[in-house]
Length: 154
Image: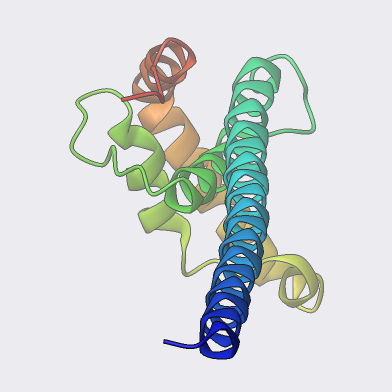
């Protein structure tokens, strides 16, 4: 083997090693960026989950003390927040009250639709909601107490 061929082989090996090192460094950087994005996404999801849990806690603490917040509205909001958390407590003995009230009142118009209802229809629905609140008040209070101590970590 001549010296020239030997030098060409060494240069070729150095080129292959350099290309391999460049590729490895690039892949390590890509993996690091991917891991950072995953951690950021997981952090975002955890923060959003905690916001929903905090919202449930705030609603539960306010209901019964704030005259503007009714048990019906609280039930609907809590049930929707539980759905967003992918937590189904509809079979829980106490907490099921929020699901029951939401189901019984889902036919009642809200927001703009409520405002456009005639007075007699609004009165009919208001009476119906008051009847549900009275009928389920004890169950709703138990649901409130149970959900205030519920651990969402499981």
